[in-house]
Length: 115
Image 1 (cartoon, rainbow, N blue to C red):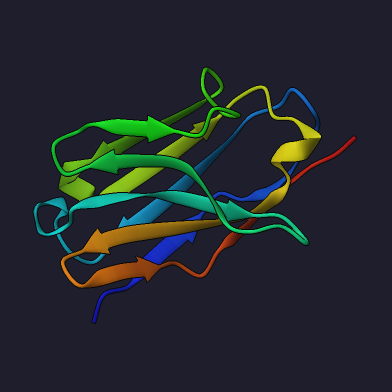
Image 2: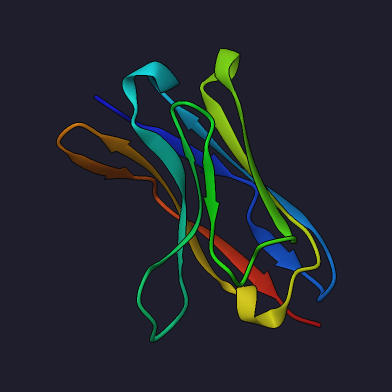
C-alpha cells in the first residue's frame, strides 16, 4: 500500500524558512509526478510545486523565486524548501503523487507564518 510520510511543518516568522519532506514507499520511476498542494482556511486546495518523473518542475506564481522543489531518488523523498515566507503562505501543505489511475495524498503538514 502506498504511504506518503510528511515532515517539516511548523511555525515561523515572516521572512523565515522551512523545509518540508515527503517520503514515498515506492520509486519515483513508478510515479508520473510528485509535489505539494496547499489549502488555507476557507480556500480551495491549490498547486504549490510539482516535479515530474523526468525532473521538470512547475510552481505557483505566488511562490516562484521563494520555494524550491527537489528530490532524492535514493531515498524516494522530495523536499520543498520555502524561503522568504509570508503570512499568506499559511496553510496545510499536502504532499501528493500522481500515478496512472489517480492521485495519492499525504496526511498534510501545517505551516503557519506569523509574528
